[in-house]
Length: 318
Ligand SMILES: [Zn+2]
Image (tube, rainbow, N blue to C red):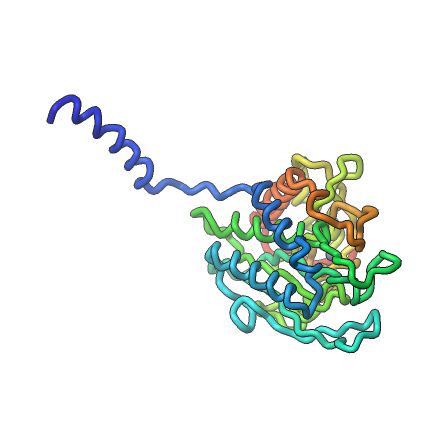
């Protein structure tokens, strides 16, 4: 073979070696552009606020299930990825008060005895006809719910993508749950904890993300649930993160982690705080800080990683 031919072949050979040699896959880090894409889709006007029982809410559920499937997660609902249930609107009187709702559940089975649950609700207030809007005349106005809680769902999807990729087999299984009917009174998480698809006593702890899109550096990220296990101080020791955060002991409160806490399961609750667009039609995509959200997810990965170095967390009441 001529020298020239060798010169031609070598770069090709090198490229093939790089592509063909198995190397430890680096899990994909939380990505601001992907986070932005999920939020822009879920909180678009076309999704009409993802009210429980609406066809747009079902579309959102299908979108989430497709994402979980694309990461290779196992369906862990009762009908594939879906766990359907009946939700009742009780805060206002409406003719269609009984709504078909569904949680969306994907499982990363690492063959472990215990499971970390990561959750976020995907429903919101629809077009303002199901109660709890802060708008004085909410009917017919799309409540996009970009922060509440497309941001949390984007976080859930990015964490699912992160853990599902890579060669590392974590010492715990991971269960990803997108809850519905949270805005009607935590109905999806109450349904799951009443009809769990993994045994409740196999849950290491539950982390809930509800409104993680409006990071305010002056306030910092709030992390609730710090009092729900004697192990939390050890887990958090020396953790600084790229975002400022503070902890709060409470395990109850107005989101889905409360359903797990009430069953004696340690919880963490990530929340960037209230704002004037809370439960208003102006909770829009462009107001979400996706760079900060990616940094919040890095912090979640660090904390979850630390819990996986410990035996199953003990529960305590704060
Ligand atoms: Zn919410």
